[in-house]
Image 1 (cartoon, rainbow, N blue to C red):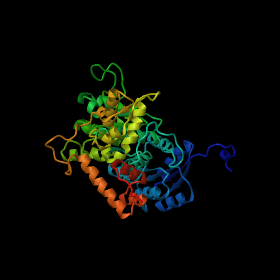
Image 2 (image 1 turned 120 degrees about the vertical axis):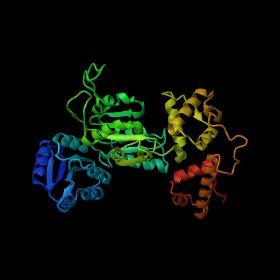
Image 3 (image 1 turned 180 degrees about the horizontal axis):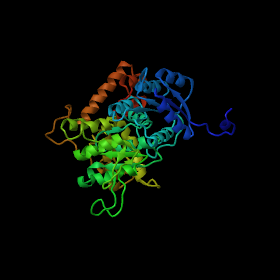
Image 4 (image 1 turned 120 degrees about the horizontal axis):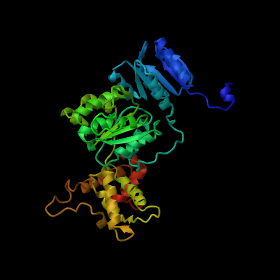
Length: 454
């Protein structure tokens, strides 16, 4: 029995090092041992797989090129058979394509040769802070509410992304919760105790961008009376969230690309560079791919930022969640005494038919206005001040306009057809429709679909 176990002390984390070069293995082993970790080494894929089968490891470091295969093969093997083990890949200097390929394959992070021991220690510490996949962990300060299939899928994706250091691109319409998703990825991951720095790229004047992102030295320009850190330095060890990244000018895109690739930044007026360790998450409501084709966004930066994409659904894609979202918002608006009015059934039905071009943010604004205008304990449709109903001269009912009515008819027909095929077995009908039983029950109630009388 080891001495640490006899004293009931925690056993040191175990790291697997995979590299066919003996001198690199020795360098990595010595560094990790000095960090108080236990180390096993392998020189090939076959040896690594045998060790992974025989022992449990808390982290794996593997070279990209091995004598009997690729490091990516080991990344995929670990992802399939040892899903709770983070794996970092060591790539050749300047091989951005290999780094991106490793992250897409499921690698936690990557290191470039020659390996910086400072970056190695930072990576190892971050990997070992990752929560396990299934234990009870500290809950995030905010939650992504809803039980619709689209929201459930987004939650599952966020949970997976929290266990990686890969850059994430979050797409979705304005107000759909992109910053909330970024915060959840940060709070559920190994960097949760470090800063989360949100930056609205569209709100920074172009002439100030470099100094805002990278900082500046005292006297670097008129008005620089003291040295100041930029967003990268402030986010060191944590997450840098670039909202509306599509608004960055091309000149700044070049500098941002270099900072991401080299993991180093130079303050304005400085002669040397500072190493920075940040997780990059970006978002925009615009179509980045279309901007690349139009020449307004650099393709190389796009591929570095869009390693893994998370699509946040619009509110009209998860109408069944509107009731839960509205209730949560009203409780929050009511304060500690819960004095906010409740939605009447008619008002809720109006909200569930509304298209919400501004998504969750618009829903919150509508409810804040309704609370202010409501003269009773129950919010009525007039308090919501939604878009006026169809006026004379507009397409009649039965066509494709207004869109909410048309979608309701399509949804009703699909549900009725599924119920008829399953002889009104709601569990089987929900399975046929690809939704949960709870979602089907909610949709039937909203659309006024009743079971046939016995």
